[in-house]
Length: 72
Image (cartoon, rainbow, N blue to C red; front, side):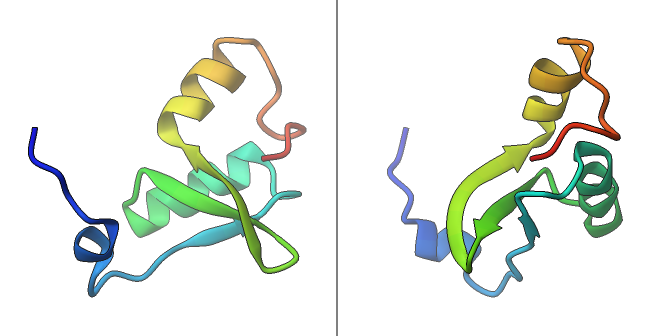
């Protein structure tokens, strides 16, 4: 697999972020609206993580957590 530099991958794209206290459902709606598969999670203007479609499926829905109550 060829190495790819993150700067080249995201060049010309807008990064979409969300606060850590956003609910999973709100983040999923944001991702659907923006047609993206992940958002950066920010706390105090610092990246603390990334939330992905896979996280929503495996860590929230499959675990029977409520997406309206579960925070990123």
